[in-house]
Image: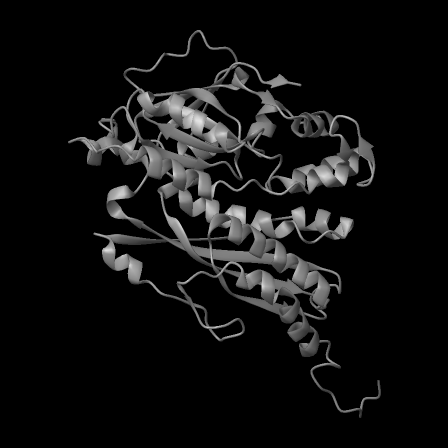
Length: 397
């Protein structure tokens, strides 16, 4: 191009017409996430929801979370499959706010790319919309930004943010956790979208192609690595609705100091989304200071993909449990009398569930002297909370 040729946005690398085409392609999928609370049409400057339902709450608390899907994006790009990564995004965002008992009321997304390919952008957003629809979360806004010269033409990254609401009386967390509570695992669908820098390093070390069939997976390596994050929002909200949250004892407000008066023998007391940092780091965040949860590593069989990563990268089990979910995607801390029914209700949805262990105050906890390979995890994510003692040995298929 001559130095004297007039420039415009298109010649600078930004195709606004392609962006408009992408919106048209995704509009129907986005509209399916909208319910009667959503005001305005797709394409407005701001998304709106009717918040009148908050008027019926005693003390409505707004909850918010934002996240991306990390370097799992690179697998989607290499496989040229873009309609599943959106579910990972919704899982990472919406399932973070449900852990306090919040019901999602809206979500927005952001896509940055080197060049807008309408069909690719529409596939990404359609995946986001499908997951939003499955979790009852209106997708009310988003942005696609074209960054020529900053990103390569086929590169993209995605992020999202969600807002939810919970009445203060229904708030889940450490204050509700009681001595004797049962820790219940809800199975993951695979790697979800954490630890992919490690996973991709293992793929590079093994030299295995993404389209190579892996017998232990029953499909190609790439298909296994792109398995979408399981969504737990609907299940968790249903469990809260069915079993309640218990009743805070007189010392419940001070249970964070170790009294563990908690919520008694029934109900859902706390939830933990197992994402970056693994099971121990995330579970400890929702336990009161002065408590310890004993988790038996042998209480489940680690799915094959995790053992493949471990063997392929010569990763230690400690390194694995610090970076991957190892088959546990969400954890419920529940009153002992509700444990069996909570597991049955979870299994009825097609998600496996089992007992990981129990929570005890430090003064009532086993000293751990008889536990093999015990490891205590606490103080993660900057939270001054409880501790998790992982013990025993993992079982592999």
